[in-house]
Image (cartoon, rainbow, N blue to C red; front, side, top):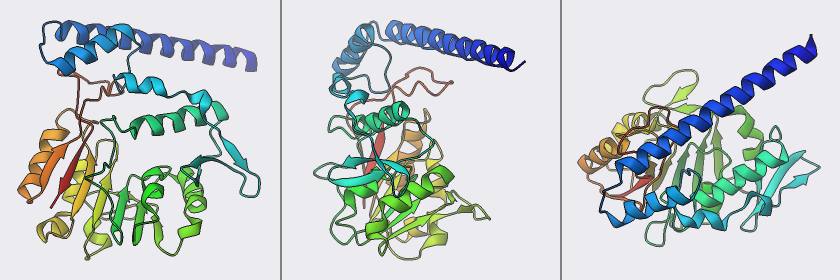
Length: 289
């Protein structure tokens, strides 16, 4: 009976993989056809990349610089947790991931924060400054906050994923006097499992980073008081999860007095099963008051 169940699971898995392959093949074909006569140089370059390479969230040649096999995943036997060296600091990871999955996961972090990536939160003109109070909403493994922990005055990490709590505590233990982990969802209402930005603080937030899988507008709805009082000074907020997010979020921030700019380039977020023309989306908005 057990072997039959395993065989059935393998068949279901292979079928799912095959159907996903077909979906992506057809999506890629639709995109190439839709932009066949488009004269925009960047979009032409993206289509050329898609013709020559497998479909990619980042349809640019810079992704070829990265290889999961080059990632050195180490293991801390005292904490019983895997980690990587992240620019001279230990970034701890989930123990539930096997080594191959960890390598792929970490590789994706480096890709999304490449200097040419549409998903890059910071650049030389848009950064966390010494003494800033930072809210990191959608922390996951914490690479963003680890990168600015030396300059920030305080950092609040918002990550509801139970599997990330222990790695985050290990990563930020050297800075535990100024890094605070809040293991709740952030949204536009307050309940047992959810907070809002407005419910957490009445003080200013120098830098707000938001990456929450398509719930970014709810985060802003839950920060209305601080936004109206001009207490949020900068924000880097993702706009690629849903087709209309860039337009909606841009309007919200512009109406609150922010100067808003999108990152260069486009993302092809094919994980969205409802993705449709124009297919390509801006990765995130950088806004400053």
